[in-house]
Amino acid sequence: KKGGFEHYMLKEIYEQPEVFYNTMKALETDGRLPMLRIPAEITVVACGTSYHAALVFRYLAQEYTSKRVSVEFASEFKYYTPPLRDMVIAVTQSGETADTLTAIEKAKARNCSTLAVTNVLGSTVSRSADWTVFMCAGPEISVAATKSFTGQLAVFMGMVNVMADGKFTDVLGHAHRSIERVLPQEMGAAVSLLLGATEMFYVGRGVFYPVALEGALKMKEISYIHAEGYAAGELKHGPFALLSPETPVVAICTPGRTYGVMLSNVKEMKARGAPVIGIGVEGDTEVESIVDVFIPVPEDHQMVQALTVSVILQLLAYQTAKALERDIDKPRNLAKSVTVE
Ligand code: F6R
Image 1 (tube, protein in one colour):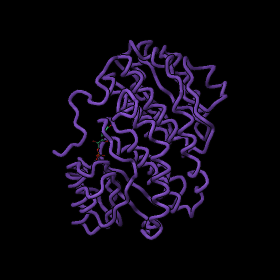
Image 2: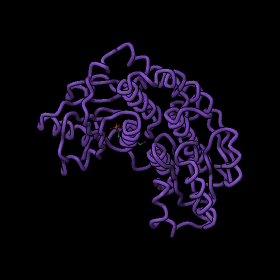
Image 3: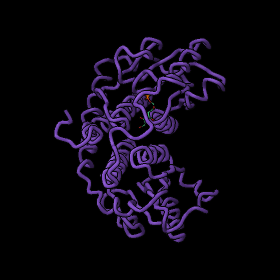
Image 4: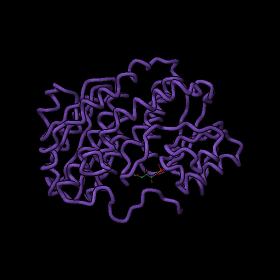
């Protein structure tokens, strides 16, 4: 059943190149995305991992399109509904998350057009929204979402590509190969560095901030290490007080506008004694020389790097939880689908 893998989570992590490729292809053949006439203002509602995918979308839309995207927790949106314009998108793997379903009803009551992004044909959300776009992740058994996150990113990146008049077609066309390349990444040294820790941080900037949030969520839910994701610049505004040799930090230091400032941030964290696992592009000796453990990803467009770094962080959480002998596919206290408020 697990296709030779020890856990469903690992099997699903390994399915991600295919999920990304299939979802992109399905969007192309479906052909409805361009017809959707994505309006100027979009609100996205979601919970958990799906919320993090929506935050990635917000950063990408802001950088590459003229659309304004706001992202709300479905559980807050229900009681504290912001002013709404144009379109509300509900992102939900299961299509059954109670808060997300209520949010879409609320949007309909406000006369917004509604779009569901989901993994389950015939799910409640797809019957409720005006439009549905399916991610082609296939059934996700592991409680911790992995391939559905990649499926959601494929849909959102496909939308960004449509909004940017197809500018990213080539970039997205080879993304599955880059995901494939990071799957065999060796994690031993990084896992060893985390094994004694009870708390840790993940930091990134821009699109890598929600990637850091998602990395931290994966780590807490399956390893039970208290992991917090932060926008790297925010660490100085309080959390620095927690840094010590006992609080490892995972820092995403990929090239781009904020590369230099990330490097300074890492040096400041090191100066406070924190062990740092740095993620950077292959051959980046500058990052490698200032961190304790370096994990490389292929050099690529930042959209693709958002995918490859996410996969690396899933693997890191998985390998750590495995070393700690946790119940990886069924973490304590959690259910796959949260159908109550
Ligand atoms: C985390 C995880 C949850 C879900 C959340 C929303 O690994 O799986 O955070 O992402 O419960 O679920 P869906 O996407 O089904 O609405």
